[in-house]
Length: 638
Image 1 (tube, helix red, strand yellow):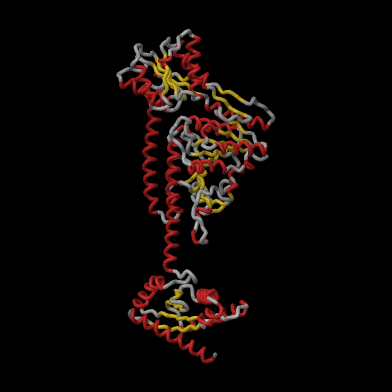
Image 2: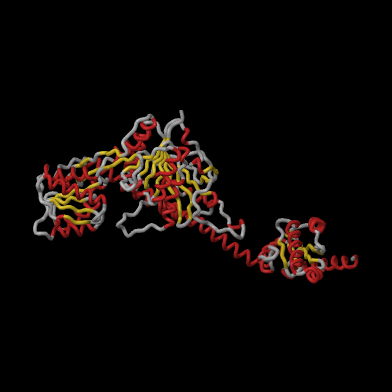
């Protein structure tokens, strides 16, 4: 029986609670023998009350990773929709999954209700915190710092705070309530509390981050925590244990949410039905900031923190090396190879850097209407550009529907692969596909992963933009040295390209052959049939010369009906064959064209070894004389 596969939509590995949900879902999938494909953008949707706005190009780049999902490969989808940057992503997910009958579970997202939803209740969690302060520590003067007024999370946590106080007949005083905007404004709120006539016994913060700013402010006033004022947080992020005193906090059961989301899908395959909304209860984590005894083991705690600090230092070093090597990269293979050391630091398994074929093989020489590099999005064909812990060669092409150039979903054991976008301004490059280590969410790697991925994107984007700029410069240069009518070189082009040929011939005493050509009867063609006919004769002659002369020949249109071809180290016999080929090609054109005029040209050549520039000019003069001899003979025979 084919192994089942679940897809998970998440915002990177630097939003801690989402990472914990993803880690738990991964463990549960492994236990149940289910493949897990994680589609992880790098940036979260800005808070509604934030002044920060993502650029449209950023939203497109972030959202494109979710378009990578091949719905034919998956049997269920888990989405953490609260932080996904684009509403369109969620709308598209809903409709495409419904078309195929794929179950979708949305986790911790009150704003988007799907057929299945895992709910993490903030009300119960905050009630646990306030109840603990009242019943176990006997506090009655408890202040509250919320996020933004009107924010759903703030209002739910504030309602829980008021509910507990009311249940214990503790009066609710509005001057004990302030709003810290989920950031450093919490310090201003704390200053406000300290100016009151009666100091609080405890301050309840609606997020751990605000609790840190609150405690910093209390310390700056010489107040002790928890002896003078107790402080609690909310969310249960890993920094709570690192702060001193360690922060008492409420933590929603992220592990339970990840497990429950997988079970809803997997049990559904067996016919088990769940309610539309399934709640996962929160838990209180008691630490020293509220007055509870210190429980952590100092040695293991500090060893763990030292390992994280060490990882940060190593990452900074490797990132500097990667960015330093970038300017020296001559090829994209060299560019992406620089990512390998940090992949090793993150302890990633197999890594594929998958670049859109249109980007990797871009060449502005494909036509005058080429629009250059653009965001474009995913292409049908991708190119694998990094060989890391697998045997797929660099530059292997594969269909984007496969996700990676290997049959990872058909392996003996269940696999977990993650995918994150690579984009640069308005240019979507592709994505990085990787096997994250099992403890990715519990190490420094998760926080640094987005930084690494964006550095790869910035380096690669600059590389391809430089390539495009070089192409534009080459086009402009080509326009400067090319004749616009025939595409042959003009006199400027001849001066530029023949100089090294002449210098080499003079230095090595090598022969140079010059062919001079002149269109036959161009003036009568112009006079009788018009300048369009004359232009046609010019172009057909140029085409014949370009086709019939050797590849290393420099073909030049030197005047209205005159051409000069410079050939290094070419024998007279070979030149004679080329001229005969030109005449035959023009005869074939005349036989097939049906035009009332004939296109022809007279060619003469001379071969010599120039000892100086004057010697080369003499070769040109002799070739011109030979050409006029041929033209004169044609007039006599005519």
